[in-house]
Length: 530
Image (cartoon, rainbow, N blue to C red; front, side, top):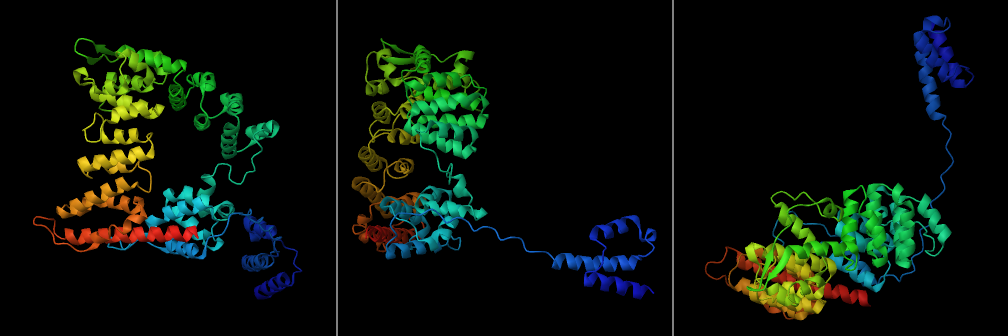
């Protein structure tokens, strides 16, 4: 009897004439089969199995999703065939086995950033079939992303919306894919500013700031009180573009912001305006701490004894970092925020060079010059930068890191000449940070100074691995035309007595790799120029 009932139930369910629904089966299971006289436990399970099959097999296909809109057109010219082949090679290259010995083969991964920069300089569009590999490369290397996304163009954003692995392209492009209104269209700008997403608003504010600084400032001021602290900080940073005296009232108001980071950024921007009230207040405080002893022609320093509320409001951080004294910490902040053009009158009408040459009492020289260095970098004052740099043959009153920052505002040719003379006087061991701020490709005097110093180090039997960083820079920054002159350095040489074991072979490989890389860079340049 049980078998007959089960067979009938399954047959009925299979033919589709059963009236029992899935909800009925669930109810029966919850209440118990003993309450349903016509159902046994086995029959319930059999029918549940049949219903499960029916539910799975009987699903109706959903309507097909609409295909994505085509990617925006890219009007840029396509790559020459040789350059397209070269890009494919650069994108398929993979790191080696993990050994620290690089051999004499050029590192293609390190050439990809230069190739992208050159291709963008020519205004080429990428081959569509290589876009996935390009985005994969940029996903793994953040240093590639700016150049890679510029080269990839609008199709990169289109692809990024389809593949979560490439979402970084959307994050790296504020307002990506958003059609921003014309900066002059006040009504549309206002609507997007009030209703848009954060990335859209950042892109909009930047666009309006570039078109009309006052309009962007008014836009920000209108919603300032309702913005989140982290958003206020990002929006405030946009005022760096076109920063001027008209921004002072708004920035003064931001000095009272509840966020310490916002207050610090507002103070930094105000200190970059030499005529601002904050710059004047900081100058008055700084000048009261520094004086000239006219008898000994020595600079004397009396650091602040307290950090009052007014100083904190103007951006002075009261608590020093670990290991730093309070008074020197406060003094440094005052000095770096004071306009540099106020020091001449304070110190006897002297020029920046004459001021930098004055002795400083009580071991305050390092603190004083370091703060002036930060002020020169912030205010991009070339005169003070040159004075604090001093001659490249001299030890210098500030650290190498600070000298590197001081070099940044100088013209590219002057930077290269200064570093070349520094290398000739002090060698390469201290020049790595300085080389990083020089324009590329290196000017001929700088390039030759680097190569000559490397050659001297090899002839002296120096430990070659300590120069690997400079050698890597040379591969990326030397003018490719220098390859011909370097041919003579690729030959094997005898190791001098006392040299590190195997140093000769490593030096030979390094110079062979350098020449090979320069040739490859020259070929890349020629392929893109066709």
